[in-house]
Image (cartoon, rainbow, N blue to C red; front, side, top):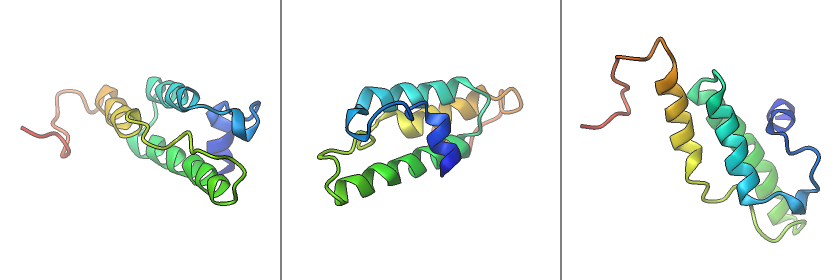
Length: 95
């Protein structure tokens, strides 16, 4: 989980100052790197766990990771951009 937090680029912010936009930008940065979809999802879930715990402990009012629409789509996009994956169908592809 430490790696996920360090890689998020959010360490310079106070817990209550992290916004939904910060989370979306972080996910986009990960998707732009050569990271596996599972890595993106795992890092997002780890960081999300921190924010969910902060809400439960009433340290923050709202979880900025909640309903980030790009979390799973960025992970899939990262997987599709992998040169080894190009030209092959992903099991998650529909149609």
